[in-house]
Length: 554
Image (spheres, rainbow, N blue to C red):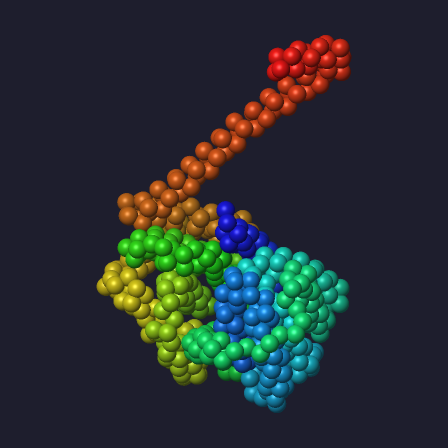
């Protein structure tokens, strides 16, 4: 295994541990939160977090562009050029941090207009907002050294530090909620641990890369132009993403209120956790897709893409069905209060939005790795325009359902068909109809599997953890059996099965060889031990044998 593969494996392993741990901790903290603090506080969490996500637009994707530019000098071991890029990164992010602080503070007078019917909570909303702003801004002032960790493919460092910090933060927050029930302290420790996380990674970067320090030369004009070009391609996607995924909470808070937003955030916590699992899978695949595109024919890449996309759709369909059937029961178990449930139509819309968003991830990954970033640069702006327009229009008439419907419509109107169209037309050179036929088949099979699972779960009452477990087991077994029956004859399924057999067959062969080697080592060790015992007991005999051996050699 070469260094790059070793780093990728290590990064994926620790990222998986960090993802799962963080997800479980989020559920534990949320369950305790709703029992010891008011649900309105959850609405404030969601609102302020999304306001600050919108402010992150100030970054404009320059960070990604600079990190990308560092790959070649790192490969060439060009320390001086790395330092030059790092100097640019530092200066830019100090400016970004200052801009976010100024804009963030200037929004304070507008906060009352972003919260309909201010929640009846015993805190100063401005103080809470400033604490959230501090939590968000700290990272900008340490980001330039953190970029080295990513550029050198040492993401495992960040995963390890993040894991430790998240565990410590969750423990402290639980203690604060249970013992003091103080929301100020709950937010303040987030600021403290955010600073600790940034400072630890900052210090480790100096230890890991001691040569990357000291004075640096200004970056040359050619490199500046390259960074500017990459940034201009990223800025549209960044604006579109923020407008679609970070404004829903602001709209809900401004038009409906913090209480409903707090209830809605319980559902988005779960869907975000599932998206994190899917992103982990995509990240693991993405590390190999670029090399795949560079070394294989388009026909081979297309075959592998279809197989991987089937795996993704299988996973997305399974998650979606589980959410449709078990979501309400899980929310009651999480919060301990059935009053925190949204109406079932809202749940169906949330699950539909999740399905449409998650099912695009593999296509988007292949599109970007194929260098087709420019081909749909205006798509995010079109998507964002539709989403924001429908948000403001529909929320007035159908409330929170209108906000979710707006996201669904904007997804169908732009990325759902534009992304596969760009990939199929510009890289695979295949008619996009093939993609939509498969997408329709996956959706129909998922609907049938969902109907079967729902029919089996319909008669199970929604009360208690054992009923939830019974539904979960049905959703775990029945849909996957239907998926196997539906797909086992497809080329994609056969390709995956062959690949898995080859992988596990190779591992089995290695294990067998290792076992044989271990047996030989054990036998040799036993023989050596026996000789040692004999030598200790009969020293004279050993000496005679050594003399005889010497004579024979001579």
